[in-house]
Image (cartoon, rainbow, N blue to C red):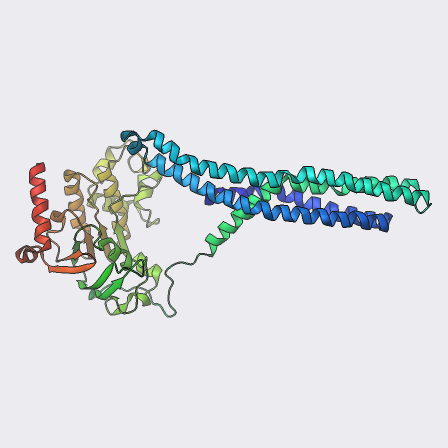
Length: 461
């Protein structure tokens, strides 16, 4: 929808603005000419022209209301279509094609109704102006003839003035033909302006300092957080991550694991004295410097349209070929890339078939490793791959977590058995903390998750 708004503004600037400005200039020139030829008749025409302008303004305001609604509905319609296209396989397998089409109809009908009303207001202007101009010419002729009979003006002046009166309303008609385009552009400009005025949720405080390499670690100090004020998502979160150590976060879905990672990267604001990097409050660290030193590998791998090389060096565009190959070898993707005809210059995108889900994830890991972040976050990086690929990714992860502070979210617990510390989240609270061996001995939620998962894998095998 944002693209559509930009297109509407561009169309208005390229096609309508010149015509509108020239029409306004012509109106001004003709007005001076009429007042110069015959002030009395010129005053009549200008007065009626002002009335015509007021009619256009009222019609424009009325029409703009519906044009805005039309564009808003178009956004909803496009969103609905996009959602259904992305879920096409589910729609087909469940046999709900007819229901899906029917659910689209209300959006389509609302858009149609608003479009008809908006275009009716805009479309009626041209015939109204044309009819109004005929009335004005009739009035000019009526009063002009009387003035000729009284010898106030010669016949030649009346003929010239009638021509002026006819020309005076032509620019109004030209403006009316571009009226709908202008309204779409105005409506789009308002939404674009609103987006441009949006402030970042997180801004640097006055006196913020740059991030410094960790020497002690990261501390969560009685952290509370909620997306909505009515419900606390994280409650009294308290734990430490030692520098250059690996911390794993496990627990049931919805426990708050990913939220903690987002807070570490300052995607959301927290109160003072809740998260510390060494002894420095996260709120006193500049956003840019912090994010430059935190690398994230998500469960949903992202491959940008471009070559494999461009994808690997995406976070460090000035990387040398040697650096790129070095990280590719570390994550065990180099050998596969060399089997491709174009090697590192092979084109790829998120839908390409030459890369499996696991290979895309390895490229994502290589991209992160190339940046060499001080802190590494792995958010369920192996959840969408098979066990063989998971094993390869785990080997790569073992390489990149060395000598850096690492936080790993994992559903498959066997990938974090060697973690220096494991915390267990349940309903937004830390319910257990320790090593794998220690947590198994406690016979709590962690051991329940571990043995249930182990039993499930044995059944599957």
